Amino acid sequence: MAEKRNIFLIGPMGAGKSTIGRQLARQLHLEFFDSDQEIERRTGADIAWVFELEGEEGFRTREEKVIEELTENTGIVLATGGGSIMSKESRNRLSARGVVVYLQTTIEKQLARTQRDKRRPLIADADDPRAVLENLAAIRNPLYEEIADIIIRTDDQSTKVVIDQIIEQVDR
Image (cartoon, rainbow, N blue to C red; front, side):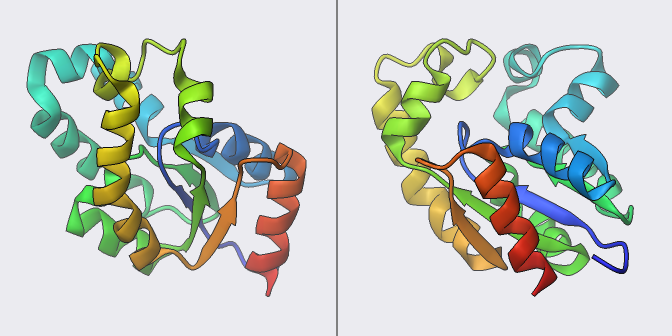
């Protein structure tokens, strides 16, 4: 990566965006940001609390603003929230300001990776988390695909293998 460019990770919850993003940034000597963590830092509250107080719409407004600001940087890796692509403005900014990597995963992997995580407001209190994830996938997967420059499946691959694939494809 001769010139400093941005890598934006998109995909559903449990795809590995934060874990992969942090290690990818370290390996490429880029700064790492996580849009959810940035919202928590700015509000002084966790995502679940923001959702509870402001609803999904209020959260998405905050998320859109954070993505707008973070994507103005150069030389960063950004892990976005799973629903960040619901905003057309955010999709446009991500597409225009960096390489968009869609980390794909199955519903089964999402369930396995998120089952004990109470910090995910869309499924934390759901009677049927699988149904929620399936509904989200039906709406969001086409949007991920629409803006992705690179698509990588994360299901049965180590973090290192996924990072190597991202670097190889970004360098192309």
